[in-house]
Image 1: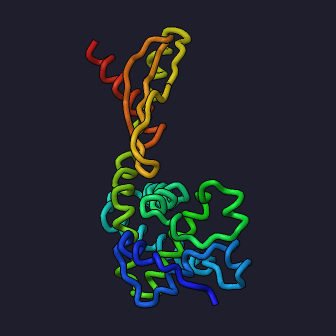
Image 2 (image 1 turned 60 degrees about the vertical axis):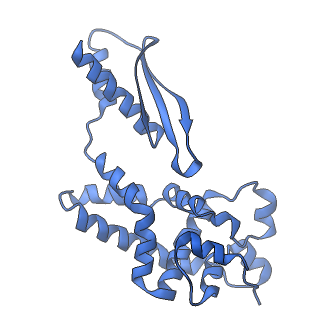
Image 3 (image 1 turned 90 degrees about the vertical axis):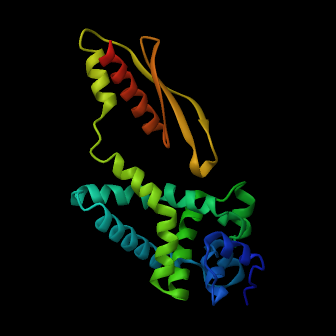
Length: 231
């Protein structure tokens, strides 16, 4: 019989949901490596269900709140927030790694829990919340962790590619060497801010920041274009 992690009350506070059946949460945190060793059920089936709930809730929210987006744009927004990187960030934010049931193979070979395992556990926890309390608390957990990412993602849908425009302008009269460099990053792993500089033939044109390296470079290119217009 699988023993229940006595520290799960801490995780309940982290995710702001109290389980009526705490065994569901424990199962959601049980990786296949542990399940194989202890001959118990893993969280794989919960992952399957949680993935569907996550897709539905995020799709519904995007559909209801960003109705001006085209179908393809809605799909891009959803894909950007319902992905391993995003779910890993949620798991890190709520310290899922401290509560996961992992087998010896994972504990020995990994100094830190693999992002894929962390991301899968988020889907499993979503399913556990749904089975324990229904769709509303599951929706609350999902949206409280994804609304900001959805909003940020929609801001960049259809965004003009400033890097391409800058390159075309600078190379109009010859082969200009354009380089982007990430000069600094700050913040915790789940909420990093990157700072980038764009250079032309070694000369710094502008800098910019963003929640990803790509966005930081895009913002640097945008600022370089804005400065060029003022000249």
